[in-house]
Every structure is written in structure tokens, then in C-alpha cells.
Image 1 (cartoon, helix red, strand yellow):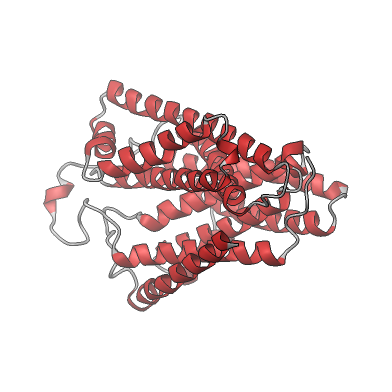
Image 2 (tube, rainbow, N blue to C red):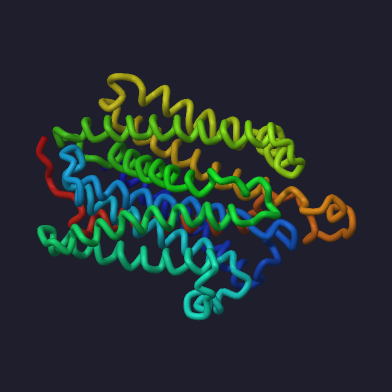
Length: 376
């Protein structure tokens, strides 16, 4: 299939480019990264949020087949679980590169404070990864057992917990007013489900079996899910930004203004809203959009792009607003700046990780028994 060959080639090229970034990061540490002492979270944290959310959402989508037996999703559960597994691996690799001392990552698991939201999230994602593996193994080798249903129930609740925990981790930072809103933990599970649905839409639209009589129905349902979640996402944006302006807290208003009118306004208005939300809604709302399989897959990629930019627009503006006004001018250094845009090395690592995730998905899809013929 031509699309699959292109996907293999693009992911391989991305991995090769990423090797340079990995070398630079391992050889020179954080020297060539553009974050510093004030903006401490950058592109890799945003990528972590995106991939982890996609993993949680893909697990939710798998439950439609493996747990709830929705006919249109029949025999798609294993493929969704594989998407979840490679996405979670990409998330863990992304956050690993962000750590100052990667060799100490184990302490977050074995020397953690149980009362810490960060510790709970770390433990949650480790358990979630183990549960994805167990569920996938059971779905492949023991598909008719009661154990599979138990694992799916546990995984569904855990996917909601870990995606909500990310919002809670940000929300408890009272010094960052842009994050300190009650809606934030509730938004992340919805965004995760949207990312999972978009990932499945991209896969089925670009790589789905055109001879499968139920493929169009599956794409149609995924399209409806994508539209509904996109509208919910727009509501959350309106609620957050309108409350920020009405509340009139300077830090919060400054962060919102950076998103809407700052140097990277185009990331919000063009990538997140236009290409990542409005264009997909307009396309998928057409009655015959499911018949345009390849274009539906491209739209799925656009939606994923929008969710990726949305994660960046959550992290970067909050970091770009000083906790104290005087900090911006009190000291002068390259590492003491609130102006952040990812460096070439940061982009290289993230592109390489994305290429790895796509390559791992393609190899797994071709070698494991993830898809079986489905009847309408």
C-alpha cells in the first residue's frame, strides 16, 4: 500500500533526524535547549502531555470493542491498545529527556511521597502501562476470558484517572493562575478521548481495509465523536478564557493574551482552531465524508496536530508570565528569560520520538494479530 510505504519512509526520516537531537541532548545536556530557570517546562513536557493523553484516549476507544461490544468497533480493540502502548512509550521517552538527571528517574517511583500528586501520577502511568500490556496480551491470546473484561474495566477507570491527574498536577500550582482553575482536571479526560478518537480516525482512514464493508460506518462514527468532542473543547476554551477576563486577575489575563495575541498567536488561531478544529468539523459534518477514507485520515492527523498545539498552549503561556513582575528585569541571563520557543535540538528529539512511535505502530500492526476481518 502506497500510504503505508510513505508512512514508513517519513517515520524513518524523522528517526534519523531525531538521532542528532538525542546525541546533542546526551552529549551536552540542556545546554542547547531554550528553556531555563524561569521557563522550566518546554516542548518535551507538552509532547508528554499529548502522547500520554493519546494513550489514555486510545484505551478508552478500545473498550468500545473489548468491553462494551459496540458492533461498529468490532475487532478494533487490539489495534487501539497498540496505539495506546506506543503512545505511552513516546510520552515516557519525552518526559525522560526533560529530566535534569535521567538516571534518577527511578526515585520518582520508589522514593516518592504518596501524598504528592506528581507521585500519584507517576505510579498511575506505570500501572497503566503494565495494564495496557496485560490487556493487549489477553486480547490476542485469551480473547474470550473473563479476565479480559476485568482488565478492561480496570484500565478504563485508570485511563480516566491518569488523564485527569495531569490536569490536577497543573491545577494545584496556585502560583500559576492560568492553570489554577477547577475545570482543568475535568478537561484532560475529554481531550484524551478526543486524541484517541482522532488517532483511530487517522489509522482507519489512511490504512483501513477498503474491502471491509463496515469501514465507512466506523469512520463515520469516529467522525461524529471527533465533532462532538471538538465542540466540547471549544466550550471549555470559551469558559476558561471568559472567566479569566471576567475575574480580572493580571497573571491570568496576561497568559490568555499571550495565547490569543502573543508572538505565537498563529499557533492558536491557525493550527489549533482553524486546522485542528474548524476544518475537521466542516469536513466530517458532510454526509458523505466517511466515503473519502484517505481525506478522513488526513483530517484525523489535523485533529491530532490541534491537540498537540493545545497542550503547548497550556504549558508555554503559563511559564511565560512572571510570578513577580520584578523578576523579568531583576537579573539578566540567557537562562533567565520568559521568552521561549523550542530550539532545533528540542524539535529534533520530539520529531524523532514521533517517528519512533509511528514506526513502532506500523511494525506492530504488520507483525502482530491486531486486526481481523470484520463483518458488517
